[in-house]
Image (cartoon, rainbow, N blue to C red; front, side, top):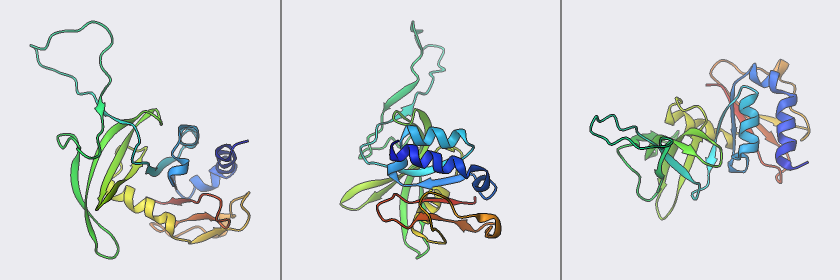
Length: 200
């Protein structure tokens, strides 16, 4: 059994309890793979995560409704060009200012694109970093607000509820968070990737 398979089984074993708290599952880039994301979405979760800067994303094809456009034989084009993160198509992306809890402001960009690796459309959030590759956040919920995607992902670094046993989740029956608060799950083993969940 691979590590991803192990984590899928772990989430499935407590899916009912977790879904009673939130349907948003947050994890780092290690988990941003089709095998994991597809499984947890099938359980009823919305997934928020990170992508690597070399991820292959494509613009969605925009149908040409012009009456003068020539008709072509065969299957219609489903996707557009590959997304170049150093030269975003700003006719597709929308810019916004993200302000963190310390008051730091960053101009980020968001759009709905297609991930070839995840085999689905996602909402991507691109946050430039000076002299470094941009940070790529995403959600499988294409209607999720980009500010929330960043905020949910950053809850990974909060330890609110620990996992005492790496092979089972804490019993949350007596520790349900108040409405609007976050719930973070984290393994006590540094070698194990961390995961978190948060209420929208």
